[in-house]
Amino acid sequence: MLDLGNRTSIYQPEQEGLIFPWEPEFDSVEEERRYRKEHLVAACRAFAQEGFDYGFAGHLTVRDPERPELYWTNPMCVHFAKVKVSNLILVDHVGTVIEGGHAVNRAGFVLHANVHEAHPDIIAMCHAHTPFGVAWAATGRPIDPITQDACAFFEDHVVIGESAGAVAVENHAGNDVAKAFKGVKAAIHQNHGLLTASRHSIDAAAFWFIALERCCRQQLDIAATGIEPIRIPEKGARYSREHVGSDYIGWLHFQTVWNQLIEDQPDMFD
Ligand SMILES: [Zn+2]
Image 1 (cartoon, helix red, strand yellow):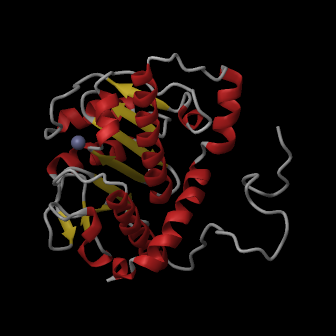
Image 2 (tube, protein in one colour):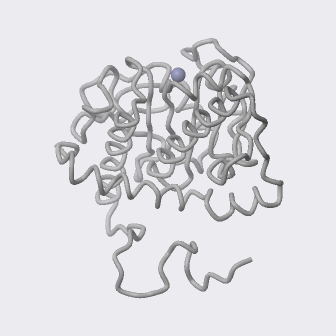
């Protein structure tokens, strides 16, 4: 293993005084809530930029820091590009809107509430009906370690085949997903689409979602050529995942998007 001293990652600079996104520390729960809500909005805006909208489908959630049994999510029938701090809703695990004026997405709370309830360590989740993720999900196959980027998901995602294809609007459907979603950061829900989760931040869940969609696109692109891709050997794939596949690395990647969005879309904070 590499000796990182007291650094979390090799990407953190050893040299002092450089501009670099350090993880936040909070003096109060209000400050942490504000941070989580603003970053949830940024994740939604990032999804809009990536073209992840499909009508009202798609939901992102982050737990409230003070009341972890409640979570913040994007409002029903509001385009990802129009989500802002003031239209987020706070929802409980049976789908009651505790704060905010908008309705909650039924399939959204069924999926997310079940996963959040079954896995107290999961802080944030993302789901959307994306062009390549949905297409790849129809194959019922996992992502192969064929690129360094794809290695982030090596032995760190599952394919959920059970209950595949039936819309998850009833509670038991969410249960199946929650059971399978154990100790991994992503799931391919067969015939449905992609899900990611983070034990760290909405930033990490959002970035790994964007990354997984790209991996699905690359798998399909390569398959379309008919050329057999070269698989990275297990040991190398695991090494890459350890260095570039953590929640922290997902968070760090997302800071690039965050910095772009706060300059270009200040109405996020309305
Ligand atoms: Zn869905």
